[in-house]
Image (cartoon, rainbow, N blue to C red; front, side, top):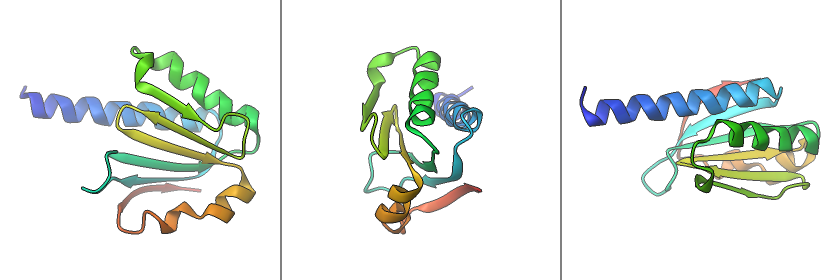
Length: 118
């Protein structure tokens, strides 16, 4: 198997794993964009949580599945907007009011929408 194909399989597996974590924590209105050339992230995930406990549950579960904890950066714990950078995936988790206020979907208008749920 070529290195490129193996890398694509690993990237896809990691994104699927992160998505499974998001589902298991019952986040809502999930959108995934494919990053474009101007972004340093291959995928951007935006979702909505009902509470800070739910947001922090996602961080804990992602930490549990990561072999290399140094590739995880978390900002905004216990706030209305949690930002998780892990490998080449950027995850935005908002409460309902903040998601509507910041409307990040408009910022990523030039990125390809690859998944939408909710």
